Image 1 (cartoon, rainbow, N blue to C red):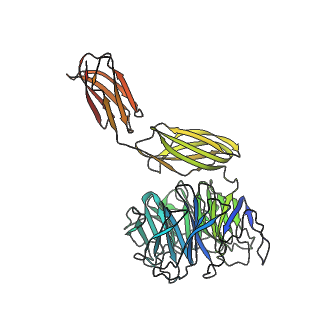
Image 2: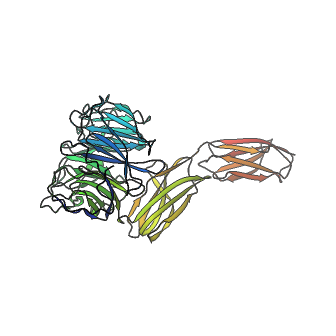
Length: 555
């Protein structure tokens, strides 16, 4: 393990390298192995993150010759736990300038794109962490090289743009078996070569480089339908990559060319996509006379976009008003103004529950940062669990500033949410604050929950989504079947119905004797036979979709 920095490190000014520049971000630790080989002037490339079921957090970073897995659970003492080299399918150690990673479930997927690289698709099983990582699949059947990989988790599909075999299109894989992806489509695209891609619920935003940005419907992975495009906008360059806002109304994208700013595309009407000049943003941290540095990759989380800049570090922008982005934090890992154009931060991952943010520097490896109070609330934990026929929701905040309230929202399709309750916030706090709420009316099937945290000024951000499933299968036991007059008859109900139940008691001739309503959330219900004469009765319980009946004899 090699470390250059820690929380208490002070960097000296040497060889034109000035002290680190930061605002509202703190460096917690850095992992670097200077013995690793360099390719085309760069030692490292992209990074991604993974959170294990036990809550431990890991960073994945690519170097020219290897893929490294770093345990960042203690962000002030990060440790490499596994690495894989000689990744070509034929077992040699050809180096790669570009690597890209994504995770799905307990698996990580890796691709590489450079020269004679012959790595294809590599799949790693992460379920053995922190002890082991296993390479469980590698295939060059669909491609040898690819520039990027993206996973539409809601649809369990993986997208491969910029491959050597389908240079003018996208390769799509099914992840039903996540250890062995299966190719299900490889269409050519109207925009031609796609350098990068973002997909949400089958809607793909493709970044076509010199052909700019197109949007497609990939419901049929063999024949995508073009929905719109953005081919003319000011300050354009090599249309490189982008990320969708959580409400799907805007797309933040970068042009990988010097002198280009980050743009916000308005997606309200896909047939009329626009990128107004007022939404462009750029922070010239090096105080150069021209905007010589390059915005590389953006990542949206709530009201913030985390941008990886060559030579301009990690930057955090508030985009709650997408027409007026505001810089709220940054950390520049390379302040050498004589550095190469592509030196500095390559990738960023801001999606850890702990709030840690990682970034990969092309020269000095993996960095772990904390973001210092730019977010109004630091959500430490959020859980949703079954509690009988209710959903119990618990969350903990570690910091609050001007926190007005939380809306607890539920969805059945992970797209359309309704508010089920609101909880007042603490306002301002520095320590842990514990919150609890209940959903008294979950639906049969999968219920998705998220928190909408709202500031006193009306600004807001969303939490991660949690899910709870309630069995839609109803079973009813009506007993006893033989009772003495005055004894009780019991309905025992298992499962959740989407409607309340009605019950009825009829005599053997079909005459209605008694009727009533039973809540769909009841586990049991009883009624007395005091008013029933001796005889045979039929007791029914119905939820409009099915009826449960029992013959009862009253003596």
